[in-house]
Image (spheres, rainbow, N blue to C red):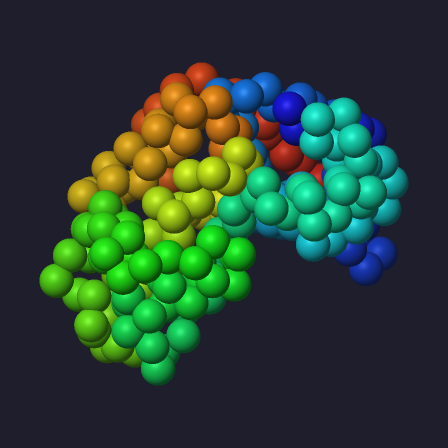
Length: 209
């Protein structure tokens, strides 16, 4: 279970949100929505432990994630707004490199299967610099196929730059994560049908509705 307890976020002198509280149970998806500048990305970074809230805390299984630290991060798969793809590496090398960094080394066959799952079969040996933005986004999302043991996925605009097949492939991956009893928290400005049990959280500056 993921909990936000009286969260407040201030960036510079600007209050993005305050008094934010919610719970996400196993097998559920939380869709964080709101206008640009409402603090969606900041909230996701707080949930990942990458940004400290001005007030309040995030709890995983009832414990403050600041105390859990590495134990929490091992349960987490995060795909940010930026792809984090290295231009000089091939699609296959990027996936294996990211998996190793996450502490879950992947063999070549597994990495190839992950790329195939997100529609990049045939592009395994292509350098990332030669690929489109949509294809680069799929490389980043292929990490999710290798993160099946991660109970919590936090995804910032994961559908950006994906075509219809890419959207369908990602929706399938999200659905499988929820069926396993995992949790997904994501932002998206696109009208995408999300699978499973989805709750929508609308953010506005300094208020939550």
